[in-house]
Image 1 (cartoon, rainbow, N blue to C red):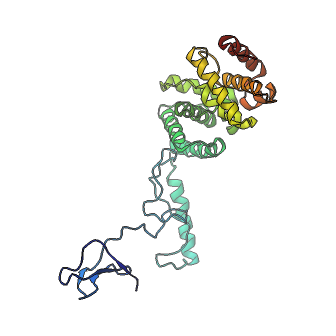
Image 2 (image 1 turned 120 degrees about the vertical axis):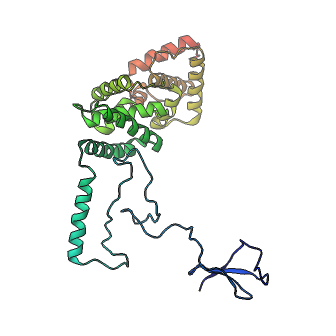
Image 3 (image 1 turned 30 degrees about the horizontal axis):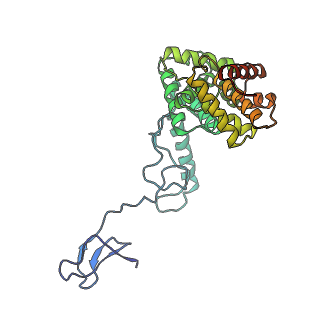
Length: 304
């Protein structure tokens, strides 16, 4: 019998003795006189039964609600344990019956075309999350945008991957996550033209207010791909902050400005990095880097 001391009361009401509890039965009683105060206490610990396929999850509540699940995580699922409530294995005939029930339960959750569309789209979104290392907030925002597009019929006649990629790109821009159209296009194996076309459609039809991408947030992404140190990144950030204060960055590609600032910083600290390497890491052409390089030099009067 497992005993542990309770600190809820100062002592027994009769003899002022020490109060103990039995972890197996939940009884609270006095150690001195044996008076039982509470026969059974409420168990506030996590339950020991799992209601999902994940056997490591022992919570009673199951998975949390999410917009990135076609049914928002509200539907029930028949598990794959093949055991009864006592823990014994089911008979072969009962296993066959439960297997048929799982199949029909799975089919009944996607009997409408909209549910099938959402299920396919969010399966792709889950893979995109791993490829682009997106946060849960960005994934939820992308799922919300896609649900709005499905609700007003914007997906009809268009590919699921194209609209979903556009929704993910819009969510990245809204959340300040530096992901380009090329990144989304490569991760989803969809043409950049299709994603950009769907993105413009979502912005116009859903009246989305997209913030301007800050070139400062693109510096760390390019620097990590090239392998530049922190000192080089800080000098590039100083260049971009000064350029932003003088309103030089307006109307220019943020990734191109960040690439040019890093190239100037590499020249400043005698780091041998070519424009070709920065072009491959940033996704902008060498011509763009040279043009932004000349513009920053002339506007900020940087010493070569």
